[in-house]
Image (cartoon, rainbow, N blue to C red; front, side, top):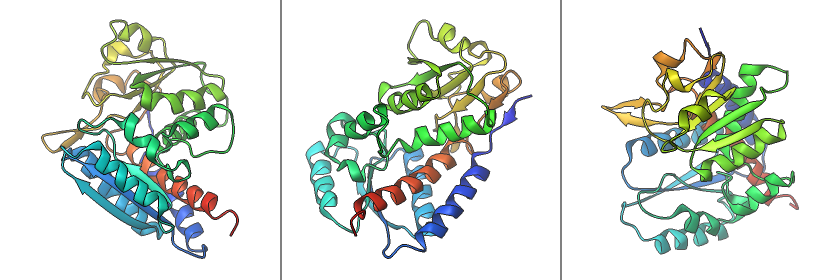
Length: 279
């Protein structure tokens, strides 16, 4: 039976440390979130981020938009937030309904890009320079480390997701000498690519995409996907089928989600520090 990777427990420890650190700061860090449309999972995650910020002593502002909002309106709001000295982090909740994240995310000041998806942060991450890395990727890496312990990571990983999500995680894994394959759900060779992986990370938003036949015995399985089905959050992995095969697995909910929120708080604190480095 697989080890269940408890993201809630690990996240609570991290959130406690952030709360203690924020309490010593001379001013309050601030996060602004742009939320577009009515996707239930996105609203759930934003609610969790709001609660986490409030508990940590971080100022939180939410900007809600209809699914049909134009890209320029979002960009104008980002430009406004870039100039506000009491907002240290800006987050556009993904996925967007129809708007192009590749057009909108680059408008965020890299120092305020607490999701870690800005090209400048990705470039600095690849170069091994100080940067704000993807909160999701950082959370996934913490969970993988919880599965492995202090030793080296297993030699191979497959990430099933869009390249947009995969790039920062791929970079972090390669830093640990892991050979990484990136693929997507529609790949006709999906089973072959997932079956060879010692670490399997899935972030497609397709419930039960990954079944027992996709998983190498003893693999570490990290399920990033969250989709609300009949008011219940479902992951991309068929948990009941895969759990007996894997060596470690994240539940949904209670795995990657809480860790992403915790690492977002870490990034907000880092952004605050980077923006106040000379003060």
